[in-house]
Length: 321
Image (cartoon, rainbow, N blue to C red; front, side, top):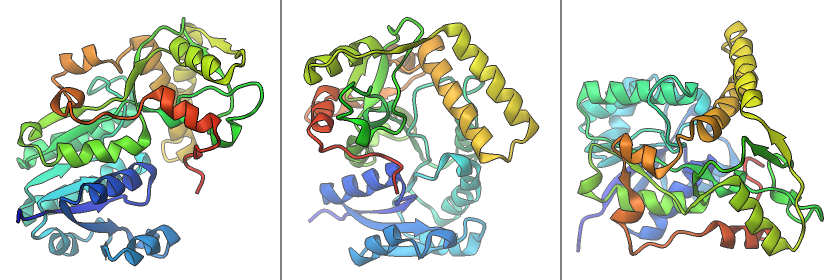
């Protein structure tokens, strides 16, 4: 019998982390442990993980000696830390180096974008990636495009409002920018394959279930719902103005989480719809591996099937807990 890889997962209670945990469990190929910070120790979501018999380490990310103890014997360390705390991973990976972890997967899991200059969240992630490379730890970076769960329009009947994070319809630019999209549930399924694959060691990998423009998404929604959708246009100039406003507000108070989030969201739109970064062509230009080519036996969920589920009342609103 093959020896299972030991995986330690940070961020298992977040949206991405929950998907990763489930994907690892479904595969049956891993011994899984979870790392939580003391501020999260009493959350019901953490208690649910413990009730499944998964070993949980409750450690502050600044406590190097405790981190080394948790990381000793770990084959793969995966971080799905939240976007506000990306730079807190630095001490975690220093401890991983000392503990001899065989592969680290830092918190990426976003759209494809340039390493610097287009998005603050990407810039901070790349700062962590560079630390990992400086330390010489084997790594894999995994980006997943944008989730289906935050990419669908609402319909006039209100049928899908229950699952919508932002119940409004905006077409950015001319609506023809293609984007890599992945169902949140498939992220963990991709991760389980990627971390077991020697071909992905010291590589960037991108996943997707579909590549769609906003106009294509709207056509699918109209076809499946039988309803005519209305939308509000947002020009390239308006997108650029939003970024400028967000940067100005953020510069006045960089510690304000709402201003930081407004900047993240504005820069996502600029990168996706103006620069058109989140595409297979740009990913391959940057040197990414295509997960769909690596694992042709795995068929991820399509956007069409996802939206049909939402129309049928089987969707789920993300960030609702």
